[in-house]
Length: 270
Image (cartoon, rainbow, N blue to C red; front, side):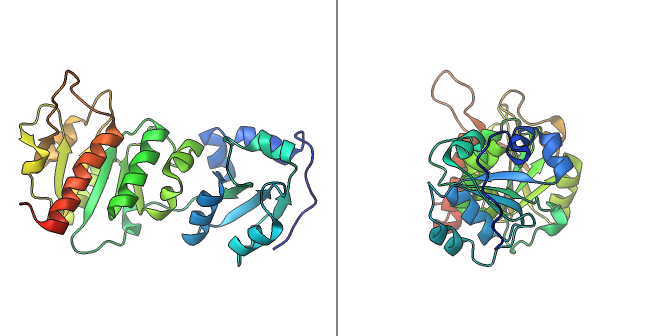
């Protein structure tokens, strides 16, 4: 692993570039995204992501520890030791463990998904908030969901807030990005039931049989799912509410329905 000369100035062009990488168009142009945090970095390594460059603060992580977790990794642009002052300039949060890396995005085609014979999928239509996407990826990882399909996204899946809020589950959960028409056609061709959360649906989510191949579809908090999904659904479902609110945060809704599906698959419907 090639260590470059230490960076001690926040005016270094490489350090100033982190500001540019806050914008999705710049990440796309440079074909990199930011991975901040020891846990997230380790997850990216485990799931075979490639790195363009790595920035390490010796005051926060020892060289021995860093080399141990980075065994076999050869970033395109080497490893840059940075001072604590410089690291604080490029870090989004405290407690990130002294490592920030630039990683290469992967392809996320429906054709890349390698699923088992009884798929449990989460489908997100037009997800807007990076924090919600990250939280849903954590839920998907915890529940053992086979894949998350992001349709017509309104946020970059490699937004730093997605990486951070998913705590690296962005790397562990199989992920596809496509438009809604492609997703609907793919689900139907693979005989996967489509179950859309919809406020006007009459069937509680607990009444649906999720033990067979299933895709649970969620829309935005502001608008919900669009007509094309409502019409494509095998069943529209609802989470009954007891209070005055008519909906929950989309990541909470995803967890409620997904873990009901897991309960059925592990213990039966009864």
